[in-house]
Image 1: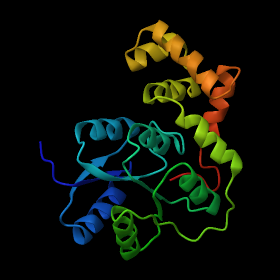
Image 2: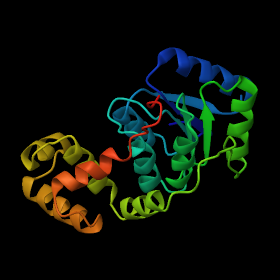
Image 3: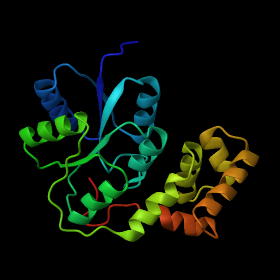
Image 4: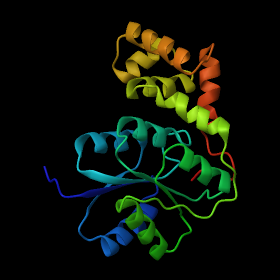
Length: 215
């Protein structure tokens, strides 16, 4: 397996993925590039390629709910920088991405040079965000802290809960024993200070990037 430094582009639009890959090859020819088009293929790629040094992540892909993929990657690979790349550049969306642990945010409307500069800044250990008018949200900060307590497996169970799946269905989807799912659900509700599965599902819904739709 190659251990060359690698960048991973996770976006479900093939044309946009191609455009980003073109910028990366022009600006950062020393890096290999990988692609993912869904939350599942993103997770698999990160598992298979520990040499990934940066993830460029679209907010809206199959298997994601707004910021859920960002939180999942940050929880499972805390040292791995994630740059959100989205057509939804509402100031509140940018601010939430920052509060949920993104190292950068690139609007899809950004010119290729700005995209290259942003990626280079993050690879150099910095961050890159467009100017923001939105204020920091204490509610988002608290939500991020609560979600950070979940293990990667608990986070996967939480997303299944948000889809309305029963314990038996979650067990089947994640390849777990039903009793294990039960234990996870109890732990999730406790960590998130939720009194019901429905309340936990509502909390996940609040991760969706409301303003102007995600993309």
